[in-house]
Image (cartoon, rainbow, N blue to C red; front, top):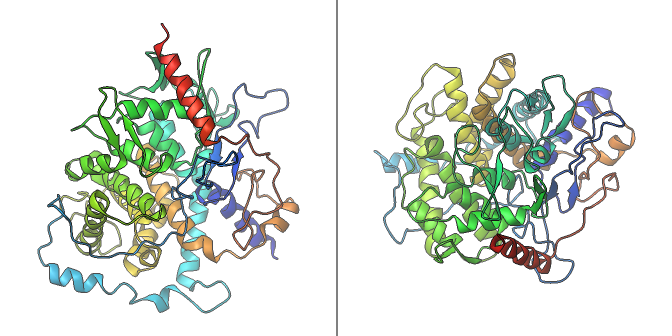
Length: 500
C-alpha cells in the first residue's frame, strides 16, 4: 500500500474516531502528548457508544440507544405521517412543485456511486479526501486555557468529541484533553464552567459559559461521553450521572428545553420518567411536546438546535423499536416538513443554505455568515436525514460548498462557535456517508506504526474493515457501570443534596 494512501487513511481514521459508533467503552489518555513527568492530575473522559439494555450486571447503561449519537448507519424512513395537531411547520408557496422535486431523491445516484472497488465515484472520492483533510487540519489548531473561555472550549469539543485537545496556559503549552479539563472545572480565561449549588453539581449559565440551559451536557452527549465520566469541583467529586440528575430537576414548562432534549435523548431510556424541582412529572415525550409548541424561527442559531433535539428524540424512539406515536409522530412529520422546506426553498445555487436561517431565502456574500448558517443547517441535515438522502445531489453540493470554503480559506480566523458546528457537520457527514466505504485493514496500519505527524493518537480501539473491533487496543476499558450502579449513584447524589 503506498505511503500516501496510508497517511491519508491514518488521518481519516484519527479524525473519525470520535464520531464512529463503536461497540466499546474506552478511555482516551488526557496527557498522551505530555512529556514524561508532566502527567496531568485529572482522568480522561470515558467514551461509550453501544451497550446492552438489560438489567444484568454486565449491562452498560451509557448508550442504550446503541450508538445513535454520532455517525451510525441507522437509516430513517422518510415518510409523510399526518400530525395529530397543528404545529409550527414551514410554509410552502408551491407544495406540489416542492413535492415533485423532493421525490427525485435518487436522480443522480449514477454520479454519486460507482461500481469500482471503492464504491464511490470520482466526485465523491474527491469530496471525501478534501473533507478529511479539512477535519485533520482544524483538529491541530487547538484553543488554549489562557485565551479561550469555557463557551469557546465547548464548541471546539463538539466536532472531535473525546479526542478534543486544549493547550494549557497558552498557545505553546502542553496539550490536555479538553473534556477532562472542563469536567474537572479547569480555569479557562479566568472562568470555570461548573459549580456546586445546594449540594448538586451544576453547569453555570451566562456569558463565557453556557449560553443555554443544558448546553454543556448536550455537548458531552454529542461527544459520546459516558455517564461514569468523573467530575471534580474543588474537593467534591461527582460523575456525569449527577449532572444529568441536576438537569432533570431543572425542566420547566415554557422555557428553552432544546439542549436538555438532545442530552436526555442520548443518555436516558426513551420511556424514562422523572420529576423536576417542583415535583412535576417529565419525560422525553413531554420535552418533545414543549419543543414543538415553540417556534423554530427565532430560536437558538436560527432554530437548528431545536430541530436537532427533535431529531435526537425521533432517532432514539426508532432505535428503541417502539412505534412513532403521539409526540414522536408529530416530531417526525415536523422534521420531514423542514427537510423539504430546506432543500427546496432555502438552498442557493452554489450549494449553500440561506444566510437568513429558516426565515427566508438569502445569500449574503459574507463568508463568516455563510459558514455559520450553512454549517448549522448541514449539521442538522447530516444527522437527521436518511443516509440515502445524504447521497442526493443537493446535500452533496452543500457538503462540497462548506468543505471548499473551510479548506481553501484555512488561514481565516473563523469564529469558534460557527467553526465548531461546521466541522461537526462535516464529521457527521463523513462518518455516515464515507466510513462504510473504507476497506483498509486498520490493524495492519496501526501495527506498522505509521501515524502521520500531528494526527490524533491511535491508542484507542479502532474498527477494522468489517466494522468489528480490531485486536489493536492499547487503552484498557474502564470499569463498567451497570444500571444498579447508576441507581446507587443517583441515591448518593440525593443524599449529598440534603446535607448542609
